[in-house]
Image 1 (cartoon, rainbow, N blue to C red):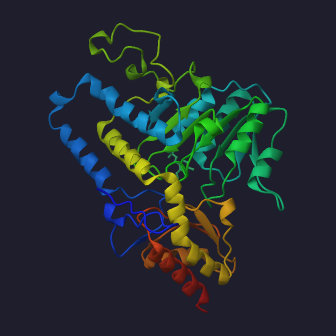
Image 2: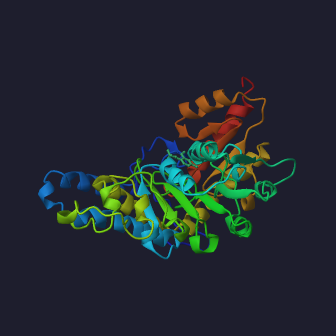
Amino acid sequence: MYLILPLVSGMIYTSLRGEFRLPRDKVYLNCAFMAPVSIRVEEAGIAAVRTARDPSFISANDFFDSTRRVRVEFARLINACDWQQISIGPAVSYGMSAAARNIPFAPGDEIIVLHEQFPSHVYPWKRRAKETDAVIVTALPRGDESWDEAILNAFSPRTRAVCVPNVHWTNGTLIDLVALSKRVRKADAYLIVDGTQSVGALPIDVQEIQPDAMVCAGYKWLTGPYGCAISYWSERFNNGVPMEENWLARKGSENFAGLVAYTDEYQPGALRYDSGGSSNFVIMAMLNEALRQISQWQPGKIQEYCARISDDSIAELRAAGFTIPDRAKRASHLFGIQVPERYDHQELATYLKNNHISVAVRGSSIRVAPNVYNDQSDLEILSDAIIAFTSDPAH
Ligand SMILES: Cc1ncc(COP(=O)(O)O)c(C=O)c1O
């Protein structure tokens, strides 16, 4: 059992560190890099490894049940109506490549991406643009422009796809997907979202946003293992061409005796976009347990919790001269601390590492990514360390 303690109003739950085996002498604030695996997810994985001792217990149904459970949990998390619109692959690049392949671009059509967007959500579009003579348009705020304004200003009559995240992976800047989706629909374009740095820690409702596709890596805010990504597909993609032709994706493959009665038909919905081997029993068991724990922790509460444990440290850092955007503009589970240019950022990164603090230093910004296993003292250790480094005349 894990503890979700309603305390006083405003407090959501206490740190869930007891659910993890994180070393006590480390401050891990880097879930945007990789989530630590919780005890229950680890145990689900170990139990699944043990089933391989005797495969005679593995039935044909297991190949489909293991993925169906994950699809159902994920559909619930993002409020999708139908679990058959969820596919499973090895990485974000895989899902994005399938999306890119199935959008009919004409020469001169435009694909909007963000400046410094994660490469797995850029390279598939670059390749598709090359194949079809479409053009990549990179949105970058100018002057006082917000990211939302920069994206809207990047639209033209030739916009055919808008490929963006929900939060910028480098600093947690929020993108207003509901407003953007309306503009995308007006342009009769496609909205393709990378939910990797948000889904699991930030509430997302695909019925409200109506993305055409959304892909999420499993090993960050979904708290699952490395080597999996889950995609949501709108019905617009239901007749598309998958990246590969795997038997599991074909209609009727549940009947092992009939596998060589080859068929041109696929499984219903978006199941055709599964990668071969997607039923990997260990990965699916861990991912399923991870999704179940997220639905108990609740993304909305994770946001509130992360805000609560970081508020004081953010105030302290601001008072010491560091810039952190207002909460309305950024996520609470992922934010950047802008460090003045005069400091050696690489030296700061080494200093934090030597003090057993895990964050990501990207350019002149420190990316902080707390989650339920952190508490206020972790954030205080971080802010004290940054202030100590920058106040030392030797730096
Ligand atoms: C925004 C974002 N998307 C995707 C990924 C992972 O991509 P892939 O699963 O293709 O390795 C990351 C990893 O850091 C990321 O930050």
